[in-house]
Length: 215
Ligand SMILES: [Zn+2]
Image (tube, rainbow, N blue to C red):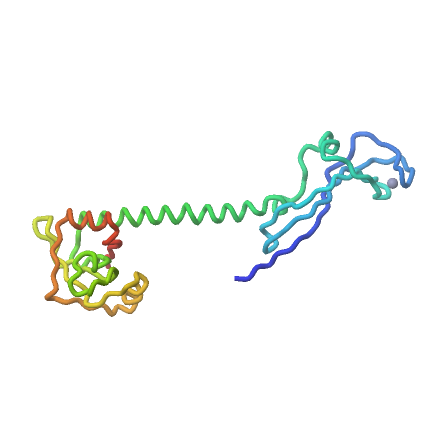
């Protein structure tokens, strides 16, 4: 990703002062305007915030004028008309980030609810993604991580879950995901693990069983 940033300036006319007066420069009796000159910083032109503001009373005849304090200026002009995007464009960034967080936690809670429903109403061929080394470490040579799959064969008495175990495992979850994408996972029909519903729930709470997929 590359960044485009920079700064810029603008001029915002806020309106006329209530009374006419004589301009010091052109000597005309004139209506003075309240003007704000501002500078802003931007990222991709969109996400921006103001870095400075100058308050000026300007002659509407010759455009010369003089700077006044913010307090003086705000006697006549309560709200400024600087474009929203210039002063509060950074809020868009905050809103986008917040939306991602909200969406992320929503979809993860949806996913957790789905896993729970798969546990309660199991189907043959449900695949439980798990760190097999922490379920049965025989065959993993003291490895701490062996992410593989338990494939559900049958459930007896609504409590005993029979699984066959994948012959491959990876020391990373991403490695297992790649095997899933390639659809290259095989199961050893002779390697059967039986777990009770309580054991499964406990393994899931410990995040040893960390996902369930169903086709
Ligand atoms: Zn003037």
